Length: 201
Image (cartoon, rainbow, N blue to C red):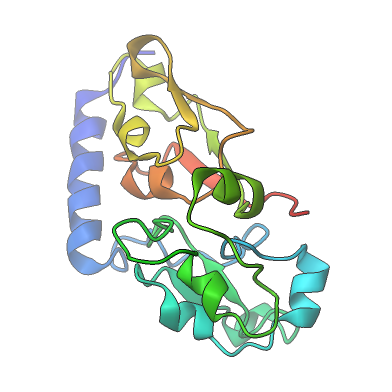
């Protein structure tokens, strides 16, 4: 498949416009918040337990240094309304990088136990901070379609993206925690890599 230069340029222009306007005007983030299962903050209990334990106080959102945690709108129904979720394409979890803290701040702030405490170490993050798993759309990814990109590879903070031939990203599902930084920086529109919520234990 040969990359269409015009499409590539248009994608870059679209990304620039999205960054400048908060991505509202170009429709990047005006999709339903939970078209799929919601991506919860790190350390979240399994979904049914999370919903029954979370008190919708939004302390996790207030504590987040990257302002990536949002409250689920009422349009999503009374069971989910007010619960915290992350939409990586809009703002990803940076795992409290460059922030002085022993634990991920949202997990420190949670008073109910809906978010379990996660130490800011690679081992603890990979064991407890499971938000989801990154998936690559091979039909959309430039590196799989005659153009070397590799932007997502540089963004991954936990070494979950391996480099294949021509900078083709390969996700290590055991290492991926679903922070969404790869999705956030993807220059493709629609984006070629995205996080899907996974089963939390």
